[in-house]
Length: 203
Image (cartoon, rainbow, N blue to C red; front, side, top):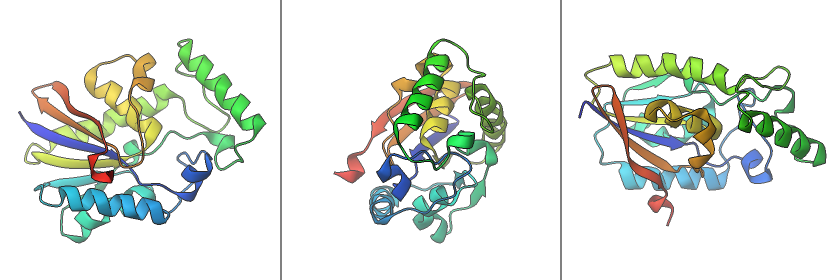
């Protein structure tokens, strides 16, 4: 095994709680529940000797792994780990119009159109391009054996497809509650998921 990678989603924000899409363009803070989730994850995994913490550029990921950063673990922000940009729909109320719009874009994706996107937003293929760049940075740091990545729900689903060579059509098979954990081992060029959607730290 060359690397052991812990991948978590950020903690809850108020927009998460309200069912409103944030995306790449909304830089929101964790709420009280999110901070409690982050604290619970830190309590459960603070004794893991992480060589590096990687996050997106958005502060909800920074806040989720703040315990590790404050403890001195080296930290790097990668834009490639940012959430998918939902364009004109970011931050909009979760009303009937939004539900219809999102159902439509997901139907396009389910139909195999992974270049489909909202105005001003990104497609799954767009996200995968920047995730591949981020992955190359992470893989190239051969001295980093155990790492923690904090990212976002939709982006995480796509990232897990990328790691496991699963088609994008399978992205919905990765549940992504706030602070859920996926552990992945890298040996050579092969990634294997060893912990799937683990939320034991929240119990």
